[in-house]
Length: 475
Ligand SMILES: [Fe+2]
Ligand SMILES: [Fe+2]
Image 1: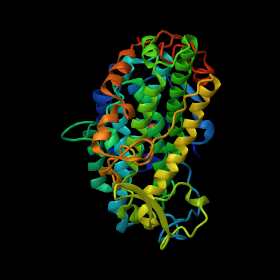
Image 2: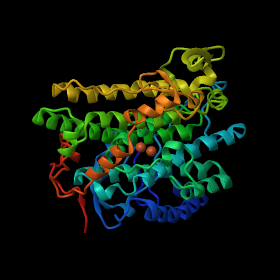
Image 3: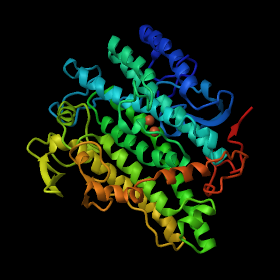
Image 4: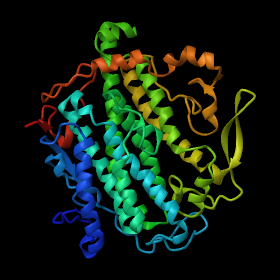
């Protein structure tokens, strides 16, 4: 039942061939998608054979298929988790009613907006990562980059299916728009800020996949609770792909730390200049990259108080992380939540109506999850007997959205003047010199089994292949 029909032009498990009009519309979008991939997807990779994983069904075993694929031939398709019979809406004003199989008229505009906003992030990250293949630290890492890229492409397909299937003509127009906006473009940028930042080097890529793909995870988890059943089923399957992206980020940073610690112990130094001269990334620089990616990513959750967030929840469109496991009334009227405010130059906590603070609730769930992984990174230093520890900066640090946008706050959470901010900026965030140094480390290493000097090899290969396996053939 959950297996995927690969005999179709567009692989799917939604019986696409039974809806001719929809099939035709999507088959018309497909060449535009491929044109987008060719123009702005991974640069110069058209003929590479990449050892990729393709889903053959949506159950957990369905991921077992690995083989060499040319990326433009990747079987992007439409995969929804199986339908749960009798599923009910379990939060908001419609609590207890049957989940919607079609879009309720009064929620149409909001649902479309949610789907377009999510959909826009997917091609954006492919665009941001477009040049990274030129400077891969190994064949293994190159393959992981491409796996992430094709899956983000598939996430775009997932959202475009919903737009075409449920939103008629304006859905089709939105689907075209998703191929027209460009990350970082001055005239027609991607919708959300972090998706217009460049991902110029592999340290940024690993931080991005750790922090920003994790934002994706939390957004998808909130949408997986949706009363609009097709959205819930689509995002459930997307989450299985997202897990790999975060693995790439977490393991990537851990391997950078491992290599740095090894050289610190070999040279018996923690002097950034000596470590840089030895071609590895010093730990304070890693902390600055972490500060940047953490702060830019938590802005993605939106303003700390938002009437849209309240509407999305109350109308049953977007739930909370683990909505079903929470023990409250799932309506939240009259409840409050602590948000930050700035009063007389100091940060204070104040109570806000919880419905309006749901962006903050999701952001706090995200922060908790992010911190757990930072603690796992710290075990690398602990094992190497190095006292340095990474930590998440304060939630108010370097924010551009919401109440905190107008105030300068140190990573420790002290409100500082503009002059103090400027004086310390390069200790807190990557400086132009840091970025130039990281850039200088980026050289292409793709001989099977070889790894760039600044990163340790992984503990094991993909699909139990050896580390010197040829994960990408260049032809
Ligand atoms: Fe994605
Ligand atoms: Fe992702």
